[in-house]
Length: 272
Image 1 (tube, rainbow, N blue to C red):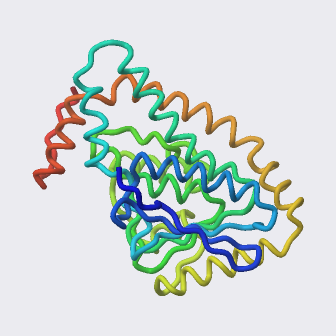
Image 2: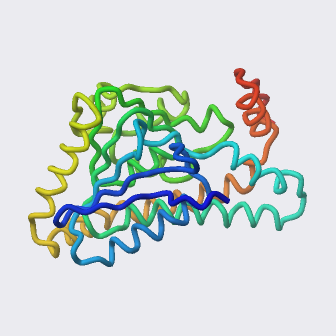
């Protein structure tokens, strides 16, 4: 496993900035990414000096989502197994990855995602786990899991309901289409669009600074009250999705999605 850290954390006063980096600096999510995501946000949640958090990509792109190469290697032995143990192992894996995103959504400090470049699949899950999103003009968003034979299971189907509305969510999830920053702003996925990456990060930090200037107790209370209705609904949806994928994810269509990705061609799905 690549030993490079998957995150950088810098501080400016009461604002912490978490920069994402994948294996080899690639903007992808692997097993270590999810483990360090939980560790990073648990530590920031416990740090009283941190009152607001900015989440940004370490390079020009926010995140391409799941590392499909690593995922294929993870799924391969489970795909060949036929006993219930393989399904339980897959369920545990999904729940572990879900818990990493829950650590972001459940942190008691305000969070602002500064999205630049591509934000795909798990990247959208991470961005929508934050309280507020701002984007650069070149940002592109995609709930792309349907195109790779997966029901999105890390939170976008649950959390986006309260962000962009049911109709927009169904369109994005069922098509897997890409949308630009202007469309994202129009449907409420992002609050503000800025000219470039530097301006986006600066705006995110300034916004987080305005939040951090308020009473930490009140900020915690606002998040707690706002999450009182959403959190149980999201958790129920995540559990159901994890069980659904544990039963059906390891399909011929998933194999085809992985093979077509490697062969750089459109997949030919059969529904099996």
